[in-house]
Length: 307
Image (cartoon, rainbow, N blue to C red; front, side, top):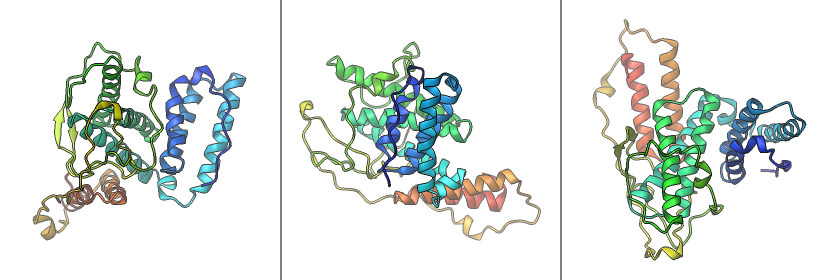
């Protein structure tokens, strides 16, 4: 992908979008679709904050130039031309990054790249709002990920050992106020995992904590880093990937024939299409289990009119 023209200095009014823009830069080569939507979110948010002062107008104009250049380069990508595909791509990527960080957290492996994965997942869920309102599940994921990033960062900074795994969010701890802590002093992740530590992409636990549902079978994107700081004293172990466990397929789905009295609404068709797009996006990460689950949902909806 051709290099983009650099942006001018970020105006102080746009501090709230600086981490989204940084995430865009980090994904320019790793995942241009993610980079595009991060910039689109920053553009839309910036317009709402201040589109009148000369400094902000100049910055937004240059950001618009970057968006146009990216859109031209990615013009034949369905994730850019079709919103439903773009939304599925972004949601899958954010969830897998969240699950990677959650897996590291539950295993008690606390390190800067894990913190960054939690925080980046929360930023990407922000970006999903370019497609409309967030689901309740995404809102909970965002709150938990941002709080976890802040909590673990502060523990390590103060020389304390964080509590591993699911813990209740302290309601009196203003996560939004401390959001910079989740991204402060974090390294730019390498495009390949460090040789000192690799992770099992299919060993992600299922669970339900603070109302957040973790679907089984999902795993982190292959380019999500897993680097343990040498100062932690944690032994380096290479974990061999385990084969994925496929979900059981309901045999009734093979014999289901759509009844003549079933009337599907335009919303039903849209939901079925969304499930199919989710499945396609999951297959990009070789996540067969998630793909099968979404295809089953689409088939059940189309044949019974119910989810």
